[in-house]
Amino acid sequence: MGKQSKLKHKRQDLKNHPPEPLSVEENSDPTHFVETMKKQGYQLKTMSSCPNIPESQDGKLQL
Image (cartoon, rainbow, N blue to C red; front, side, top):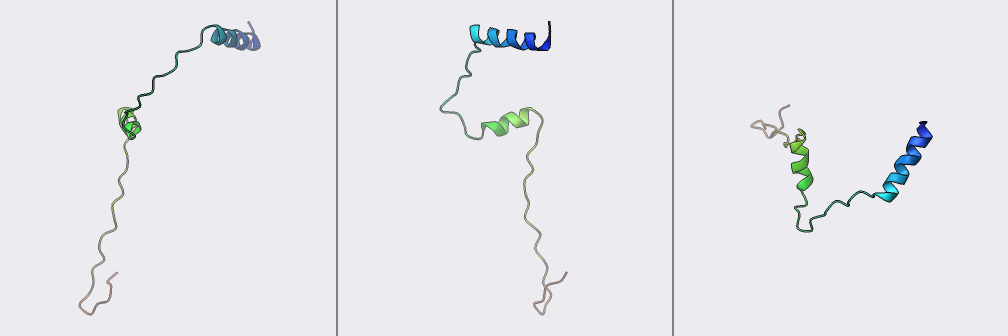
């Protein structure tokens, strides 16, 4: 069986037996994808603000 024949067979198979549609929950949490990504092993990076720059006694910034 050639590549074209296999693709034709798959397409006919999908026409005759379409996959079941995934159920969509209307009350689902909009941040559900975050939980899914955490389950897959990804971690979200949280941004931290820059530290305060100390000021000298005369009011000038110290760098």
